[in-house]
Length: 333
Image 1 (cartoon, rainbow, N blue to C red):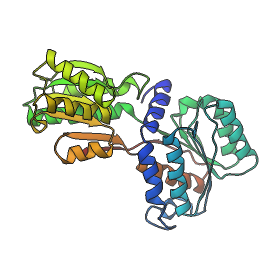
Image 2 (cartoon, one colour; image 1 turned 90 degrees about the horizontal axis):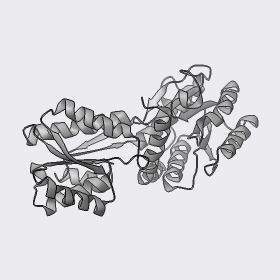
Image 3 (cartoon, rainbow, N blue to C red; image 1 turned 60 degrees about the horizontal axis):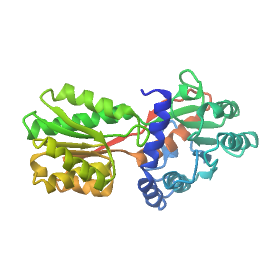
Image 4 (cartoon, one colour; image 1 turned 120 degrees about the vertical axis):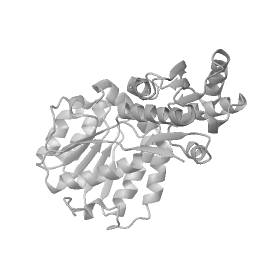
């Protein structure tokens, strides 16, 4: 698992990349009725009691987190729960005060928090569980100064290392199938501090080396927007005309790589272009055979597993919670 600082950065970058999906979740679930198959209250080991859920992201001023709040409200309302949201606008003290109000006044039965500063709010989480209020907390226990599992709290985190491993495995798989295990890779890595942690980049390269020893990374640069990525790869091809593989760490860099290879006369069906991000256009490119594969964090599944987990925790608030990770979806033709 990644370290504390990387964990927070990776979680935030991934959430900010999920705006459209989060809004889609809200729209798609708004028509569900209570007791539907998506209802976590009907599952074994969960409470059927309707919950008052407090959702506290570190801000609601960005579309991704506003979309996530809308999605949670729609899904929870559909099964009889009620959601209240708080907007600390990126201020740790404000987030702490808002959480304290919920807990001290007994305004919620459950809390889902994406913290601005995890250790700042740790005391109020302990206060919440002391009153039987259960918690989903984004991150890992050490982010909050906790050691191991905690009663009434489940932690949830993105796993960038696993993401990088899957990206490397898909690339090696394509190179083995199409290029006889001899790939020449242009890698548009995830920029430090811009999209995720270095865990994606490191695990990608480690996995690719292990699974495709005949492959070399002939050019490595930071991912950029589509046009810039296209220009980067076109320039890289001048120094490495035999490059036959492009790996992007987001959809824009992946699709920019596709445009550059097409412009250079390289057949996407006979080369390897592997992407990450899971947007609609990238998924269609996979179906059309232009990208070999694409992968993405599944925030719809994550939302539903978190909602279900709140009901599971509420069934026995004294029991220790668990560690969840955001599911990863692999898209292939």
